[in-house]
Image (cartoon, rainbow, N blue to C red):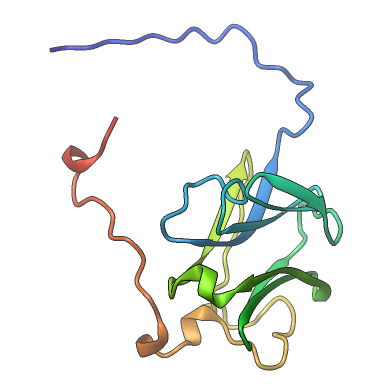
Amino acid sequence: AQVNEEISVKHLPSTEPDPHVVRVGWSLDSCSTQLGEEPFSYGYGGTGKKSTNCKFENYGEAFAENDVIACLVDFECGEEVEMSFMKNGKWLGVAYRVRKELLGGQALFPHVLVKNCAIEFNFGQRQDTYFSVPPGFTFIQHLPLAERVRGAVGPKSKAECEV
């Protein structure tokens, strides 16, 4: 079969309330791309909201262009994992506490959702950090390979993709 589709764009509202979106955080590898909109997906957005499982709550403060957000996850809190964020070097407090047993031994992965934005990541590859790393924390890139968990392997070719 040969298939064709045309889409005529008639209107793009310039009054959209959030034309630019940045949401950062952590998710299980099995989660969708919609950060903070399902269980085990934990986000913090530029509107000053945290979200998980489609529940949005006030957290920290809004952020915008030229701000730097650090995403912290602490696995050394006893039976819980704590996730927190920093804006321009200022700690915003614990955003999430999740019992380790609920994660079922699965790893949390960095997760970003963006719309109409450009961002830059620093997993530890930059010579200089934007702000001081909190005591006890290390960049992901600096973890020994034996402590890292590989995420899902993507398709080898377009033929393996679904449309």
